[in-house]
Amino acid sequence: MDVEELSVLHRRYVDLSHRFRASWVFHQFAHSLYKVFDGSPGESHAEEFQTLYAQLKDVSQGLTASEVDSTRIRLDEISEQLKGLTRTLVEEDSRVPPEQLRQFFHRFPRYDDKILFQLSRFLIYAAARDGWTPERLDKIDFLLTRAGQQEVDGPERYMLVDRHQLRENLEGLWTLTGSEVPNPDDIEGHKGALREIRDAIGSVSTLDELNESGVLDRYRDLKHRLGPTCLEPDLMLQVLETNLVFKNLVQRFYRKEEQRIVAEYQRVFELEAAVPLDLHLERELTEFRREIERFERRLQQNDFRLGDLAHIRGRVKDLLPRLQEASSESGGGGSTKDTAPIPAIRGSGEDEGLAGHVRSEYQEVVQALTESDAEDSPRSVCLKPEIFPLGLEPREVVAWRRLDSREGSPDRELERFLLVTSALRLRLKRLVEEIQELLDDTARDWEAPVYGKARSTLAVAGEVLWRFHHRVLQLVQEGRAEDARFIEVSRMRLMREYSGLWLLAYKPYLDAVPEA
Image 1 (cartoon, helix red, strand yellow):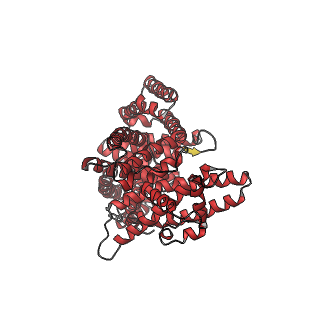
Image 2: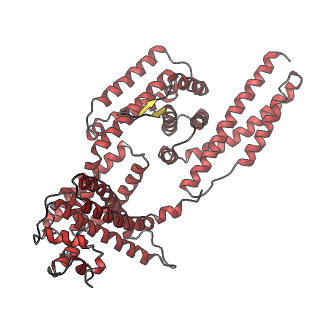
Image 3: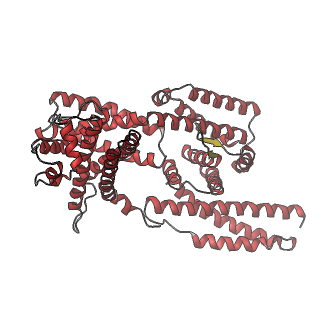
C-alpha cells in the first residue's frame, strides 16, 4: 500500500476521534442538563462510548502499512457505530430548546471554553446531518459568544477575548461545515450589514426605544438567513462583536431603569390588594405573578433578555389601567378591612408603595396603636395582649406616636419607614404560618395561592432589606448612633422572617432539584 492511502486512513481516524470527543462531551452535557431540569439522569450511553473508545485506541496502534486493509474495515465499523450513537444524541439535542441551553450555562457559568467549542462541534455535525435550523444556529451562536467573551471592569462589561486564539478555533469549526468559501464581496456585504446593526443599536437611548426599533429581530433574521455562512471566521468575529455590543447595551439600560421596571409591576400588586377582582382578572394576575417570579429568577441568574423586559412592560401596560379603573369605580375598592385609607403615610413614594403592599397588616398595626393608652410606656404597650401578637418593638410605638403628632420628630421619613417595615415583618410571619398549615403529612398543595403571595412579598422584602443599609449609613453619618443601632436590629428581625418564608415559599423548587 502506498503512503497516500495510509494518510487517508489516518485522516479518517483523526476525524472519527474528533467526532467521538464532541459526541462524548455532548452526552455528558445532556446528562447534567437532565439532572438539573428534569430531575433525572436521562439515558446513559457510557458503555457504548467506552466500547468505541477502546476500539479507537486499538486502531491507533495499527495505523501501519502492513495492517491497512484490516484498519480500513475496523474504521468503517467504528464509523457506523458512531453514526448510530450520534443519531440518538441528535434526537436528544432536538428536545433542548435554546432557552434551556442558556439557562443551564447561566446557572453554571464556569464551564471550560474547550467544552463550549466541543459542544459547538457536535451541533455542527448535527446540522450537517439534519440541517441548519434556526434553533441550532441560535445554540451555536450562544456557545461561541460565551466562549469568546471576557468580563472586565468598566462601563462595557463584556469584551472579546484574544482575537488570534479565537480566530484559530473559529477556523477549525468553519472547516467542519463543509461549506464553500464565500465570495469576498459577499463577505464584505454581510460585514456591512452587521456594522449597520451595530450603528442602529448604538443610536437608541432607552430599553423601550431599543425594543420598539425592531433591531434585534432584524439582527436575528440576518443570522438565520446566513446559515452556516455565519461561521466563516471573519464574519463570525463580527457577529460575536455585535453580540457583545448588544449585550452590554441591554445590561447598561437595565441597570439604569431597573428601579422603574420593578416599581411598575409592584404597582400592579398594590392595586390588586386594593380592588375587588372578577374571575377573569384574578386569573390574569395569578399568571402575571408567575411571570414575575420567572423574570426575577432570570434576573438573579443574569439571564434576562430584551424580550422578557418587553413582555413584562407590556403586561403592566395592559393590567395597570384596568386595575386603576376598578379602583376608581370602587372608590378605593375592596372591603373595609383591606382598603380603608391608610393613615400617617404621606410624602415618601417608596413608603407609600410598600404600605400599599402590606395594607391590611399596616392598618391593623395602626389601629392597635391608635387605641393604645398614650400614657403607657412604649414597652408596656408592646406587652398588651391585643398588641403583643403583632411583634412590635418599643421604638416602633414611639414612631407611631411621633407620626400621630403626639410627639415631635426630627425625621418623619424614618418614623414612616419603621412603622411600615413592622407591618411587612408581620406579613412575612403570617405567611409562614399560613404555609405551615398546608405542610402536613396528608396534603402539600404547591399550587395554593399563598405561594404566589409569599414570593411577591419576598420580592418586596428583598428590596426593603437593601434600603436598611442606606438608612444605617445615613444615620451614622449624622451621628445618630442610637437610631442606627435600632435600624440594624430591625433589619435583623426582618431578615429572620424573610429567611424562614423564603425556605417555605421556594421549597417546591428546592425539592425538584436533585442533590449534587
